[in-house]
Image (cartoon, rainbow, N blue to C red; front, side):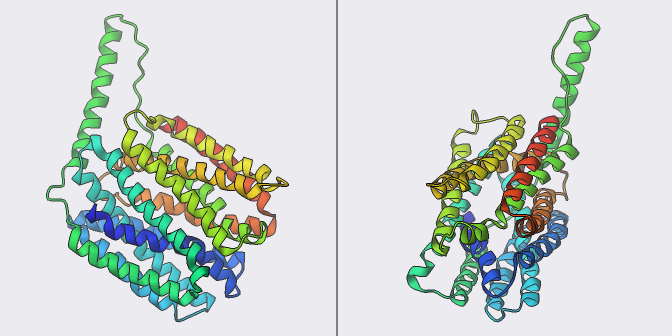
Length: 396
């Protein structure tokens, strides 16, 4: 658990920033369009570097250095955040923040993959995501308590910077590179052998006139990538303008906005640890499409929830808790699947695909919300989730 402590501290800071930053942009005079441009610029830059960091780490066969670079750079950038309120400069800083943020993602995934056997990947990723999601949850609680202690924006940015400095020190002490890099290669060989064995078995039975209902099928990598990207696109379209919608349209105070997102994160924690404890019987990878459908249904149900004359906040909160649970299950299984499918040097592909969806959605969401209204956002998100489910169902 100590080797994940630095990532835990990192998630505390980013859990707080996930809600605080959109509100901060509006507070210093920015618009929803500004927020969309900032988010999209940062995420598009991060996409390129997701590939770069993953490729470079596999090329060097060293991974710890990228994690240390990530946490130390973020600590410095967050400190510089406190020195400006200029939107253009804030955009540049946020781009740099995203570039160095993704520096630890691919190396972390590789370290987990090479440390555990293939059969343990889902449980290992689920434990990591669950443990760090607790950090995200604490970060949201930190935002909830901010008004109580009258902390200003500068103080909170400094706290986030110190958290990353501590994460850097912790990772330097407890994170190590895998002693042997072999597990991903073994998985590739295993999948190829299994595919060939199934083909030979079906062919042999056919030649001897034995009927068989078995069908040989290999995962469609391109379809998987498209389905994953669409799922993340829908998620980003919904969640990027959501804090502002809660604040403006539902008249929530900042502490209540943080609390709603904290409960959403708590749903994610429950989902991650449920997978960790019961991954053997919880769900099959082929069911990822069904999860996308359910996320779409819950998104459309938000339309009824926000128009409810009473208890709308309670209903919205319950929906977000369920969405957090399903996102956690989806994320762990798709992450594990991606590590099976990608080749060496392509470990950053998963984070790049997540980044593509998040980048496009981070602009589309605020744009639709400001020009057409939030109800249209929900309709678009529901449709994209449905398309994602169809693509994933045909691919995995």
